[in-house]
Each structure stands twice: as structure tokens, then as C-alpha cells.
Image (cartoon, rainbow, N blue to C red; front, top):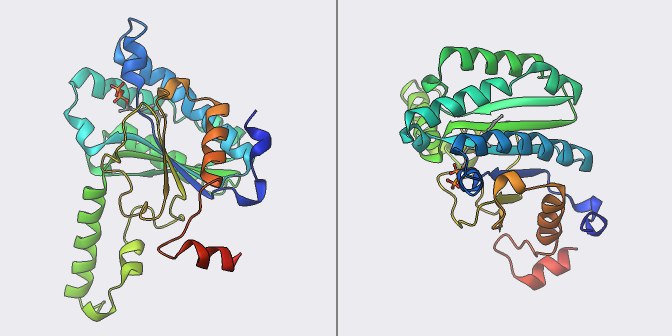
Length: 246
Ligand code: FPP
């Protein structure tokens, strides 16, 4: 229904997702929270396929935040296991998907790190879509490491303080290989960003839906894109200025 309404010439180049509501989806079915995460991982693959078929070049998923390390140990372990299970090379090669991981990898168990590095290496030349998973990620962590790197370059005499611009910060963020998201979608009814891509979403359109992540299907994605395309993106200018530019 919504697919026909999409203007294919004005698709976002990058959509970011906060996949919320897995726990509540499972609990509503009398199941453990990890049952919801398993269903959520299937949704993630379906969303990648749908975005790929539309021709969207980048999708980023918030799979595990820095703060999620504080969840009960069983849930953390279930999420780590689930992630490793879904890093199957064939899955990515079959669909020509490039995989990238962003986050504080020093906290990841070695087997997961090995799988991620292997997958990033063997999918690096895939061209259909780039799927980015933010795992052990938060913008506060990302800013901290960017500031440390920049300070070190100044200390080493490689960079002058006067030459630091917002571009310098961009270049030191974990997302420096892709454009900022034009659209950020959060499922599960909450309306906040939860330490996710705070620097990169300065001008993103935000879309919130009550749908729990495991129920987020192709139609939901089409609807969000149609909504996004109905908005006027002004980047601080007036509506009249933007209209004149068209
Ligand atoms: C938030 O729902 C979701 C998460 C903390 C985990 C999301 C992870 C996945 C969907 C699996 C990732 C898999 C791969 C392959 C990257 P919640 O548990 O906070 O839900 P609630 O708000 O209903 O409790």
C-alpha cells in the first residue's frame, strides 16, 4: 500500500534503527526476553533485504548499547550468542551485503571479535548495501575516543588546535565511512535517542512508532519512508529559502 507512494528519486541514503520492544513483544507471548531478541534478529535481516531492494545504500542498527552491559548476565550472554550466530558469512555473501561493526570492541569477547573482523574483511567489496551494527556502542563512548585521538594528534604535533573543525570530529567518529542518517526510526513506543548517533543525527528526521521491533515489517518501513518524504528538511533555513532552491 505504501510502497507505491515512495518517490524512488528521493530515498534516504542512510537509515538508522533503534530496535526497541523485543522484550515486551516476548513477554506479551509469555516468553523469555531473549525469544524477542531472536525474533528481532530475523526482523533485522528482513529490513536489510527490503532496504537493499529499494536501493538504500546504508542501514545502521543499534543492537547493544554501552549501557546494555548492565543487563542481567543471562540476557547479555544471549545477545552475544545471537550476534555471533547471525554473523554467518554465506548470509552476507548471498545478498552482496557489506558488514561493518561500530562500538567499543575492546569489551567484546574474543570469539565475537574474530567473527566480526572476519566478516568485515570478507564482505568489504560487497556493493548492494552496507549493514552497520552498533554493538557496545554509545555516542558518549564515541566522542570520548574521538577527543582522545584528536588530543593525541595535537600533542604529537600532527594537528594545530586552530585547524580543528567539525569535519575533524566527523573524521574521528566511528561512522566516518558513511553519510549521516537522513532518517532515524525507533520502534517500541519510546521517544528518545538513548545515546545513539547523537552527533550524526543533528539534522536527521526522527520517526517513532509503537510497533515492537519483531513486528516491524516491509510495510512499516515503506510507511516510515513515505512519512520522511513528506517532511520539509530545512537545515536551519526558512521554508521559503528551501522552496526557492528546488
Ligand atoms: C531493545 O529491546 C533491543 C535490544 C537491546 C537488542 C536488539 C538486538 C537484536 C534485535 C538482535 C541483534 C542481532 C544482530 C544480528 C545484530 P528491549 O529488550 O529493550 O525491549 P523492551 O523495551 O520491550 O524491554
